[in-house]
Length: 289
Image (tube, rainbow, N blue to C red):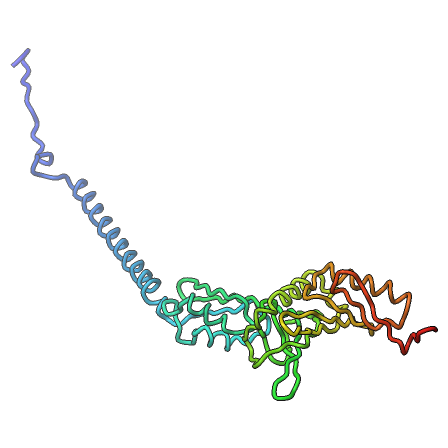
């Protein structure tokens, strides 16, 4: 008691420690409902994500490929390529063996290189590079002469000589000595440098190759060979060693132009020793005329 006033307290039961106000209870109910909704949403997201991952990594790679593309060689038989690579309508991302397919594709003579690429989860791509023809060769089998295409690596591309010339004029090679011939065969090592040189010339200076209609291989009695060239639009034949470089061909064409202005009776020019010598047709240029 102080100054006639009594200090007391008012008891408010709603704020008793054991009693929760209504607005607090309502807020807690809303929080619980939101938490439950969030948990449902997260559960649904996880389920969907799990199904997607199972489909993506477990199911799709085992299903047949949805798309297979073959590129690099226009006009090639894609069904033959796929069959050779071991890729069929039931092949899947998991079952395709890239390295084995690439090795199998190299067995096709027209293919110089092959790359098989898988795109996850169900696509594949085959990239091919064609074997470039270096020359058309005349071969004999069963008493018949027929043309065939030879690559710069000495592989017989096909029998018949169709395709893979890319519109370029290639020289005809005669005089090859082969016991038996078949597509994909490798020529004897003695011819390696010749066809490698021809491929370089065909790619670098196709106009020089167009100036030669035929190259005959003349085998020597003991070892090696030399060459006889038949220039296009000229009746003169030219003998060379087994080296047929760009410089040699240009020198040969230059000498043909020079000598043709002096005499039309030249039958043969010999460049094998490095110094040009020529043979005159006596019937066109009789002695003493």
